[in-house]
Length: 115
Length: 114
Image (cartoon, rainbow over all chains, first blue to last red; front, side, top):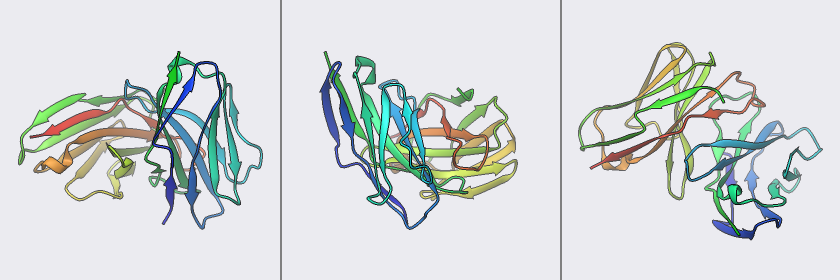
């Protein structure tokens, strides 16, 4: 069975600085996809970034980038130039290729951006 | 986003009563999902649907049933609510089963069972 682990329950960062959120996963699959979702206090689940396992290049979306280490089964999220609006819960999620339904989430990291 | 509306947004009810949560989407996505979110657990899949009248169980399906009579609507029913089902419930949709397509989420329903 696949598992997703986020080892940092809470983190804080100063506005304009950079922060990295950790995520590791366990799987025997070779084809899979990884996602980071953001959940602000409004409770919405917002897709931040996604990575396809067979792509070696790390995904980037504006200030958000990932460090995908397939051999180490690590998928960390880096937020550059942190903004107050980045304050949220961040969830790492995994799904094996060709599979519907079985999106597996980590327990989340609560990020606070301080002015 | 994917035009997903969950209703109600909040509900308080008593143990033993039936409860139905509704998810409505306007994007004609084939795949729909129900999750629950609890502190310390992230989101866990309850049931999902891969087409009209086609549904299957997820990780935490006990005590829940679903129905999908139309593409746009996916209902989650608690036949006899228990306090352990107090949670925030999220509906999600997906356009294709290929997993490079992310799931899009509704705004959630906060359900309290007293």
